[in-house]
Image (cartoon, rainbow over all chains, first blue to last red; front, top):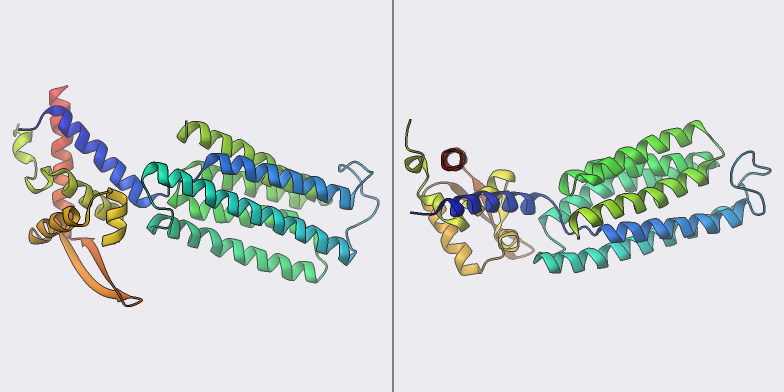
Length: 207
Length: 99
């Protein structure tokens, strides 16, 4: 007959098998912090392009309407996105190895599919609207679609991602109410929030 | 009060089988390689325990080809889900009485 500790071990193993089979647990918190830092750097560059030497708050003296500036802003955003994805992939791969899991499995596929459907939809919509001159939509729409994507994907990973999603949506809606502050909200949503949630995840799961 | 030890499912007292059923209860279906990945066990170990569960009709097997590679999917049957739940209840009862 088995010992009582064996039965407690059985329950622990049920829990871990269920969790590991449903959720992608290799997501690295530290890569979130780094992504936040890239976003803040990108926002800093964008600030120099748009506002310098004026402060980024308050009334703007001119609008973003020159296509060269729009193109450069898009390049910055694409750079931030690419760097964040590469960092996230590499650091999650390392964490997966440590946990004895693979990075490309059923859970990460579920995570990706759920993340990218709202994200690509939003991205295309934003590009279409920008091509028509609706520049004011960029910051709120980025934040809102990203938030929706995170909530959708959170079923496949740690719960913090769900709360990050809600925060991004709220921020996006406020940004929509306050046109002209797009860059500040964008920097807060993609920079500060990533750093905060990334740090929380790092201390909760990676320590 | 019934003796909780007697309520335990003999098939599921085996750790690997219990973990396989946990994965299949939590997911619609799971394929062989993904199971191997999650449970971190060898092909042989996994295959023999899957066979045992199949024999009890706790899971159903469907074979297909994905990109010309064989892909075997496992699904928990109603019988398997009920057995798992009963086993879990018995475990809970056991730990409660022993504390």
